[in-house]
Length: 93
Image (cartoon, rainbow, N blue to C red; front, top):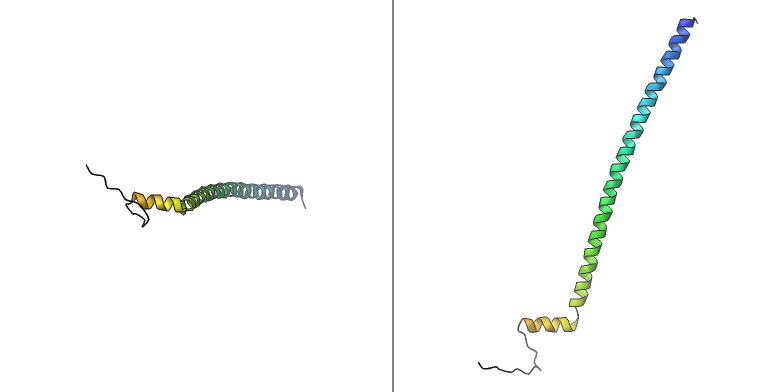
């Protein structure tokens, strides 16, 4: 091989290596960005899950409170219902 061929082979090898390195770096950067986007999406979903769990817990507390006998009786009286053992007084104007 002549000196010119060796020089061309070296240059071709270096250019190939640089192109391969550039392609690999581009793929790595793209993957980092894709991972970052997915992590943000997962964080948003986790925040939504926490929000809906809080809403469910609050609703459970309300349902538990409204399931008591006292609350049911008070609400029934607000709606005008009376119980059979109630004493009713008539107020004349």
